[in-house]
Image (cartoon, rainbow, N blue to C red; front, side):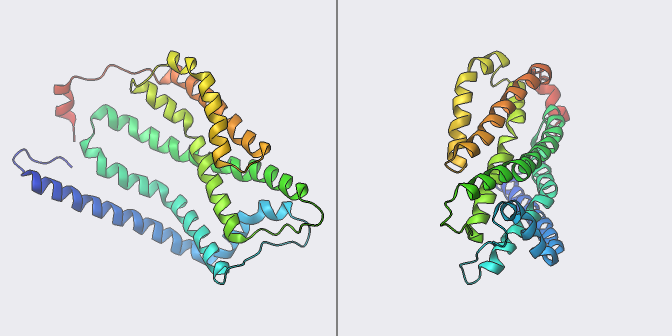
Length: 257
């Protein structure tokens, strides 16, 4: 929020802290409301998340809960994660409302589409991970196990693996947006991005090796889409990411707020 010119720096900083606290409380309240609404379906949500693994396991097999409170805590964590995803547009709006008064008009026009597309792309990455990657990876792992091994994963380890994969693929699908922003803000150019293409290919496989299980199938399912998304970002940046001439400082100051 813009401060009057005669406002002391201490008061301006304090007002920003108060505004930040209010936005954080509202964002947390949105997540809490979503969690309360989802809590009656806690078991169903976890069963839905565990379906890819259950389909890959031999008939009659189930996930194991080795911890005393794991049968309660793990579904609760899954539901809380789902609540955060559902409330993420509200959370991002609170973040936007806090920083918007300090942005120029051309920055405000850019922020809206970026936020919406980022949420959609993140959800798209999670959907690709759930419907494509999990089915392939879990089927491969369960059928690769020797006959003497009873494959019954622990639910806490399964939850950690699923959340890590969701976040990895969600962030991977943000690459086209990041590429477009870098070009549009003048940080780099399409020509330079094309020059570093070989390094991006190597980087995609390095990132896949870090965030996925140590098997070739999982790494390929992340590295290849990551590479393809980078190429998509370069193509989109060539059409829509060209930096435009920025308004003069005097003009921006009159429209800031």
